[in-house]
Every structure is written in structure tokens, then in C-alpha cells.
Amino acid sequence: MYVLTLLGLLAVSATSEALKYAIPSRLATKNCTYPANFTISNFTDCTDRVNNTKNVTSFYFADTGTGISTFCSHNSTSKPNPANSNEWLCDNTVVSFIYQKTGIAGLTVIELACPGMCVYHCFLAHSPT
Image (tube, rainbow, N blue to C red):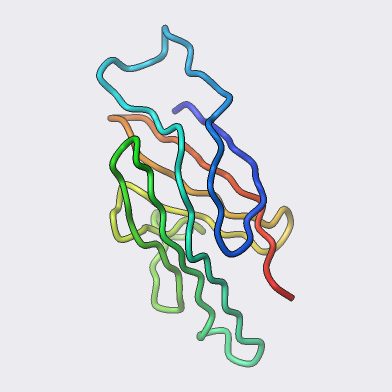
């Protein structure tokens, strides 16, 4: 698994910059479109301080280079994948995410763009206070 990382601020909506990392040619898979630009839009993080079963995180992920576009959300009925993790599948299951509010808070989006390869898109996220 090769990991590509992109850091940026996330407010209501965020758009990536072209990745500065290039996969070494000896490791690149032929006939594979690697993610270069992607968009996170309509990001929402709602926290109910009284009843945490009402907590919801949602956003849209779009990668025009790979043609992947999907809605992602996490609420009290969501099941992690894999079990006992903090990774949540999006509607298109080739995309999943981790949203962490403690420690180094942020949104990590995992895109299975090429066979056997996982690409991570990472954002530092700021929740409204």
C-alpha cells in the first residue's frame, strides 16, 4: 500500500491542490489513473451535547480524474468497516473516511483508485465552536 498525503484546511467546503507527490515509476501501475485533484463539499458536522445518538458527519467527495463521486456520512446507525475501527464507508464503497475530533482532529478520505492500491487524502478539519 502506498500512501499519498495532502494537508489543507477544511471549513464548509474544501478543494484540493494538485498532489506534490509523484509515485516512483518503478511502483506505478500501468493503465491506472491516480488521484490528483478532488473536492470535499457540503461538509457538515453536527454534535448534540445532550444526546450523542444524534451526532452526524456528512460530505460529498468527488474525484474527476478517477470518475468517483459519492456521498459520505456517519451517524449512530453507521457500522464501521472494518469492524471495531473508526473507518466509515461512503455510498460508493471504494471510498471511506475517518473523521477524528480528538488528538489531531481531521478528515482522512481513503480512495481505492487502482487495483490493490489505497490512496489517502488528509485534511486538517476545524469544527465550528
